[in-house]
Image 1: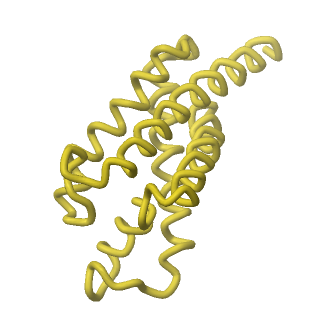
Image 2: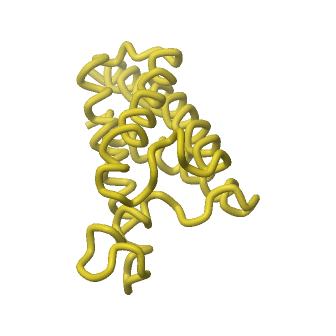
Length: 145
């Protein structure tokens, strides 16, 4: 449970980086929106009603699920360097793996350099925030027990 809560907090921190990157003109469409757009019925590249809300929900669900897995794998001993590696592994696995297979975005090495720099930085922030949140939540739970 602490991993899922930490994942939600980490996703919020990561989203801040993504919004900043978009405002700086480095992103184009946000990847979660592009992914949801491709999955919804209709043309995979045309905007659809409700895609923004669904993209946000999907992004947080993915972040919470990834956070829960981190919590299980580390059992409260996930130090920040491990969180950074975990965040970068998610970035690499996504943007070199399943995301291009959905044909929503090209592989990282062929995508807009700005978007991938922002996404890599966002995943580092996710990993740092996740490790810190899970460690703090697990520490509080241990003190309460």
